[in-house]
Length: 194
Image (cartoon, rainbow, N blue to C red):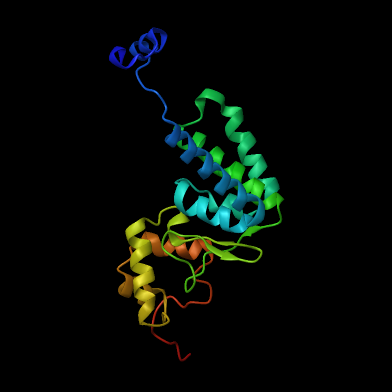
């Protein structure tokens, strides 16, 4: 640096600073922020779908489907715990805040749909989002993928058929049933004549 007449103050600052944030890196962050802001303002439902599909790892779909008042109450409940809140609950607050914002903007979380929900991505509708199977508590990524793969072969005849074709555990089927995704689906393939 001295050979190229770089000022001494700059050389000294380089020796003190471990990492200098490059301009290209800063420009990339700014462009990313502009893109996010554009979608959040002009295409909000697409923004929320992308956020919940990619960034969020903790969900409370039951709470999120109940609307703004339930979400606000849950946030206050977690915040009231203070330092006693678990790390999972602290991460959940961020997701709930965004869900509250989404509800305040007139969108809603729909029910998980056996024939439309994806494994991990939220689906966009005009007035809200259809959650993926993976957003349900107790339904892991592998179980969600196997359900999506199994429905390619046609409609399920019963909960038993769903379990056999998707290789899902009984617990996963119970969680799907509790969420309302299996409404109207009989328990077994056998018909009762009496």
